[in-house]
Length: 129
Image (tube, rainbow, N blue to C red; front, side, top):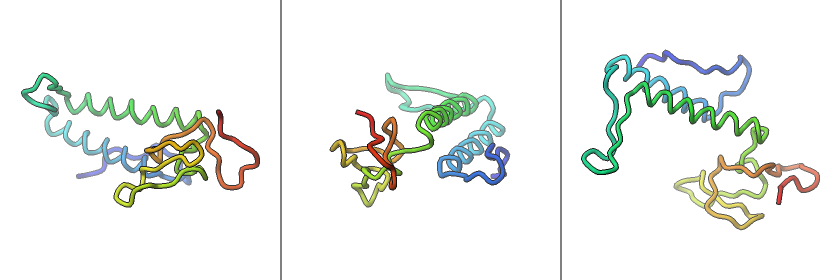
């Protein structure tokens, strides 16, 4: 597969795992769209829950999902539970699943976030609530 869609990150800015995944998703869906412009995917075929989407519709949904993460990053200052001193992984098989040791909440995804996660070296309590 030829990469047709690259990252929009400025030169010198870190390309995150999420950037990598979305770039791969965009390229895979765009390639399918070029090969089969009128086709797509059917999920739960033959059941009442059946759902269809074309490759271009899926590209649009991927952009919506990426925008959600971008706006959340803007709101939280690019911090997530995985950078918080109160988060710990609870699974070797799925290390992105963990718990908030401060609040005693589990499972918590590594990309979840409080309003202000407390990072190593923070002075004072930056958690809300």
